[in-house]
Length: 337
Ligand SMILES: Cc1cc2nc3c(=O)[nH]c(=O)nc-3n(C[C@H](O)[C@H](O)[C@H](O)COP(=O)(O)OP(=O)(O)OC[C@H]3O[C@@H](n4cnc5c(N)ncnc54)[C@H](O)[C@@H]3O)c2cc1C
Image (tube, rainbow, N blue to C red; front, side):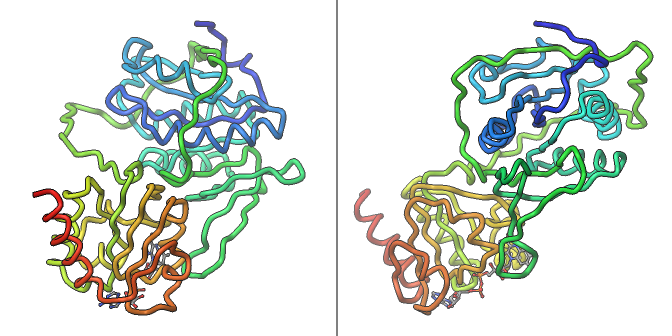
């Protein structure tokens, strides 16, 4: 791998944060390369995935990186970068920005991305667009879109500062493979750089937390307020099991505790793009549809035929969501037995 000292790092490119967790590349870092490839191509710039870590051997799935859309992968390696520590990771990325003067630096809206991006923007006094789900280039300017808070409009955002910075919604884009193997480079930091962090990690206990495959599920069953009771959400899980689907829902039902927050679909949660999405008793507020509008086939079950989700659906069933859910379970159980 080619080594390059920080002071000589190429400038004015588009950078994307490559998040490693438990030595594995988070898929969201590959998702964000899809719109950014287009952006960098239109601007005539190179797209670079930036990865921080302890040493090259610590990354388990390096071969994935050979097929990504980025033109280059930059590694910043140091024993102190073994564990994610916000202050040190921020300091390193700020230093990289100061030297590489990128046109844009983009982060997946993971917990780490959401932690790093505002810290960096704060230190460098830059604007930051949060949770964008569309990035385009118009008249050589990067334009980002996201639904605005509480209103039924899509806001188009322009960063007044350079680099343009944004966090990109999870699941908003599909992962695509690149045609050419990217160039791997190690960025060597100056000897006098302080790798000190105020965070001391004494012990790391990785929980066996289930990674929810909602954003990549082929079938999504989503429940809304029209399902009314927690018991009906248990039935939604029962149906999901019968057809290998994942369960999601709207914000109010998550807040009610009918399903866990991590299953929220929309601007405050995850984006899904299944082959089949079935919405049970969901009105179709923009904050929700922004996270499911890329579904291939949409079925809406609602008593109100004028509900926005009914209007955007490929197929609408006008009727009581609970009754239709019961009928589906009954019918499918017969099919499998
Ligand atoms: C800043 C902000 C961020 C937000 N982020 C999100 C987000 O990420 N995700 C999200 O989902 N929401 C989000 N919201 C909330 C969003 O605006 C809506 O309030 C929410 O999506 C509505 O959820 P719902 O469709 O379950 O409920 P409702 O809008 O109350 O709709 C319930 C639907 O059920 C139907 N219904 C009633 N009874 C039955 C029945 N028996 N059978 C069938 N249908 C029935 C009704 O006709 C209605 O259409 C956000 C709001 C704000 C302000």
